[in-house]
Amino acid sequence: MKLNVESNAFLLLKELNKIFIEHNIQAYIVGGFVRDVLLGRNTADIDIAVMADAIDISALVANVLGGKSVPLDKINGVGRIILGNRGDLSTRDIWKLDFSTVKGSIEQDLAQRDFTIDAIAVDLNQLVRDPVNILIIDPFDGWNDLQQHIIRVVAETAFKSDAARLLRAVRLVAELGFNIDKETEALIQSQS
Image 1 (tube, rainbow, N blue to C red):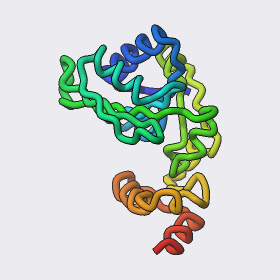
Image 2: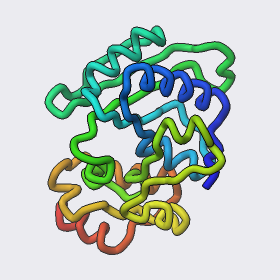
Image 3: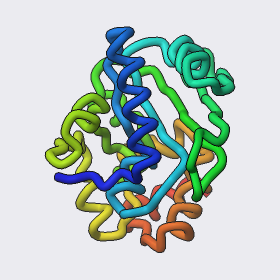
Image 4: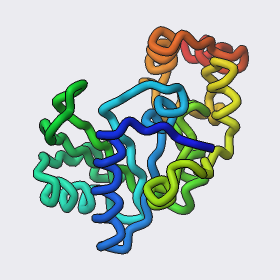
């Protein structure tokens, strides 16, 4: 599968990959960025799952790239970097990079995510080396749900583990013009 990553985003991904290779860190592009690229949408938000401590890695990357690192969740290993204008970014001024720590395998990490359309990953090194022949990691058939314009939870416990996901489901419907599948809708109603 070919991923049509916007050129400025691809240049940033190449810089990130170089840092990760230098520090022997396995990294995956996940979530909304992969979803939006598959839908042909540009975004300045990049979600990166790393096989290392994401708080430490986000501080390292911010230092190398000249951004601001903010720990979001020290217990679960989540950090954010804000990068200002990095040259000719005609469509945006700020990049938001969210780093999460992979606990277990990438498939186990994806199983903890909210919706199937956001439980898709791409190996960053593979993407940078060969953006034409990308193997997406999609254990919950999120690609099919993207094509069908469906919002579906990854697991029945998605809303119990994080109630904010109820609002996120509605936001994704409004933002993407998708529909919530019947089982997910029933779960939402049972949580209300």
